[in-house]
Image (cartoon, one colour):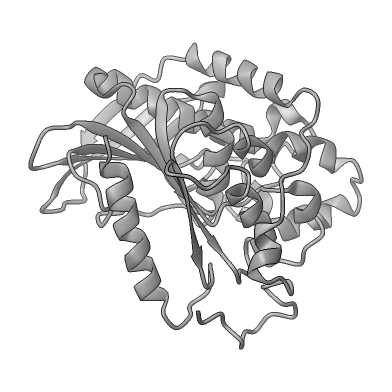
Length: 321
């Protein structure tokens, strides 16, 4: 283990917690209408026709056929992204891949899957899905609509993910029931919110997931999107009423499919206690595995080795039938 000991932050990104203390953290209690809120959104999303439009991409790769894609999401939002199709072998599975709060400039060509149609959507307001007046800056994006739960941007991003699953099932009906999701940081939190309410998703990988354990998230110093929400809370004391409905750890307690979680002990952007709140929401078993990294959102000795080991686990996880 090589947790960083030197860093430029004016707070401790381990928050003074050891591994056993992190493993003991549990998700907060849900608000009374949590499940009803998300089930209604999911049913409403299923009524939207994604109308995917594909074009040959300027990007190319020897292992993948690359297509640019645009599809319709809720609120008449057009979502842009990329679709990768294997040059060798049939399409036997589907995978939706989320992104961090930095957005995405291109698909991840090193994703360790085969015989898989891989859809890389850009969530609304970010990268290929930019639209005024939504800020593409994380500290502005995370506040969009935060005063109205039905209009909060995170809910729209969850719907974009559900619509991505609809796109894959429309393009490749034969893979229905064999579609996974993988997301890191921002995409990890969005995935935790989306997965339990969409039974079309059969397995999920969440890495460094954010938006978890909101009562704690609002109190821990950070340089991530949580910092903007903490500043907002100073003049909007009731913001937790909205955030409790968007708690990734609360949602994770409802996940019933196989999961591979990756969480960090040191992270200045997504506080480790919040990450572990997601990982601890489901018991470790043959169907749920948690990988503990030394650090997240920060370079550290051994990072390449740990990421290589995680990549191999991801390959085996999404290669399972």
